[in-house]
Length: 60
Length: 186
Image 1 (spheres, rainbow over the protein chains, first blue to last red):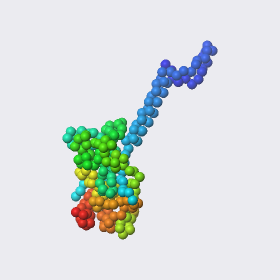
Image 2 (spheres, each protein chain N blue to C red):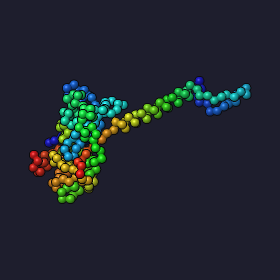
Image 3 (cartoon, rainbow over the protein chains, first blue to last red):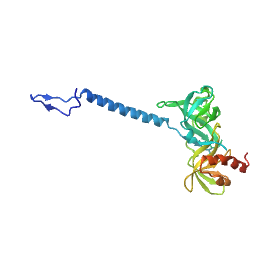
Image 4 (cartoon, each protein chain N blue to C red):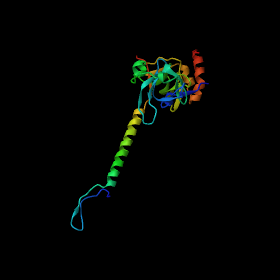
């Protein structure tokens, strides 16, 4: 299980290790995306819940 | 002495039924008619942190009482669909707002700008005064006659209003009756 690998690395036997995203890396990506989505949703919802005092006067 | 609160303090209050004690909605917009001198209704949110706007509105005549901690209605059927509600509640006009208007006495003295409405606690929406940003700085409260025609850019009040400008709601509560007595309105 690896983290996000930075780039191809030559191994001792001269083979090249292809960069890959490990389980933990994907987990971090998913968690970050979820946090951003929840924060955006809550902010939007709270704005929609706003209201105010509408004090209308008569027509001239 | 009258117990008073500002219209801004009503926003976010729960709407509770008198019969069942059920918490059915939350106040979103407070709608006031300057011509009538009273609230004409409220728009509502559903209850709960993430819930949205409620379609039904609450006309003032359906309100049992507006208290410090809740707006009381008899039961949930008092909430009205927009198509059955008065036009000024279902689709309130927002372009001619009293808030922000200058308050001038008949003698031409500027008392400040209107920033909020002051309501009688326990009524179903009687507005007895305005909160103002005083021309000399700071907040103040002025009492109003029961009805006041407002249509221009400034709110013109009787000269004696200047004597009744108060610094807090408690002071205004004591001043409202005396102000109306002086005007011969009671």
